[in-house]
Each structure stands twice: as C-alpha cells, then as structure tokens.
Image 1 (cartoon, rainbow, N blue to C red):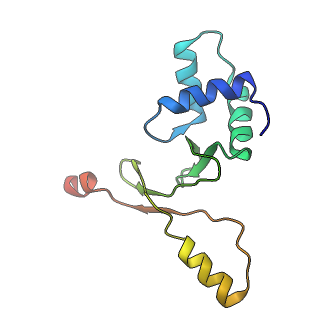
Image 2: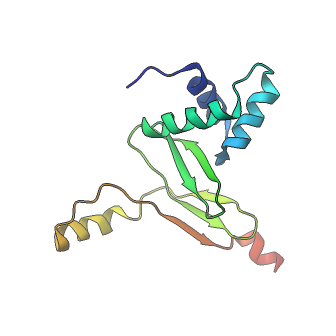
Length: 130
C-alpha cells in the first residue's frame, strides 16, 4: 500500500469520527471547523479518490449526484438502504449480491469484477409522517 499523504491522513481522521456517510463538502467543512490551515476542497476530493483506489474508503451514490464516503476495511464493501424522504442511509450487515455473482459465474461463465447496490425506499419514520 502506498504511503498516505497528509491530506489523505486528515480525511481518514474525519471519516473515523463519522457515524454516517459523508460528502466531500461535509468532510471539508469538518476539517475547516477544526483547523483553519486544513487542506482545500480540491485536496479533499483528490484524497478521497486516492483512498477509494487504495480500498480504504468506499464511495456511495445515493442517486442525487453527490457521492458520499465511508471508511472500510481493505477489500470490504457495504451496501445501504436509502430513504427517499429524509436521505438517511442504513448500512446492511452483509452483501446481498455475492450469491447472485456465484450463480452468474456458474450459469454464464462471466467473471464478476465488482458490483454496486443501494436500495431506495422510505424509512419507517418517513412512512409514519405521510
């Protein structure tokens, strides 16, 4: 694994404290709030892309055009339930697609490199409001 730049280290520090998915803007705002000499927004984006490529951070698309990020263990990935009402996300404990990948490999001889899965709907709280 490549040595982490100072920008990457600072981004990871912020993500370690997050208990939910965070956008680059969220991370930048948190860094600026803690340290006026914090890296700029461009550095945050570059750091996030580097961390994603190293497998330390996962990028998640919630369907609104802005990627969110979370720390993962190397080689690990997560899927989420995403509420259309409040945009809250729930981390799923297991991968629902691995068994499907096995079937695809077996039936079609297709070697799957990866997958993306986010499930969109309405959370219990938002269901009670409507």
